[in-house]
Length: 65
Image (cartoon, rainbow, N blue to C red):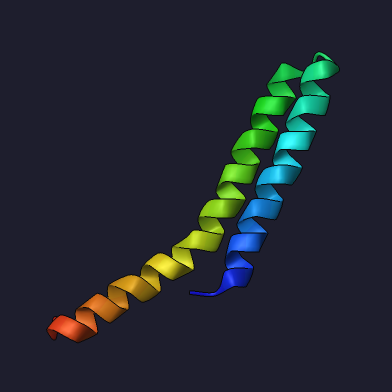
């Protein structure tokens, strides 16, 4: 597994946490929730490729077509 992906996910998490805190302190809880959801979507896009690779590896190991 690529360690850079872990750092990217951690960076997105830290960035979204900071944005969320700033928006909550400013009284914009609705936009803070949207920022959190956007961060979750970005991380899911990063992870989807790994899941696809995992499923392809399992399929090739067990000879499933």
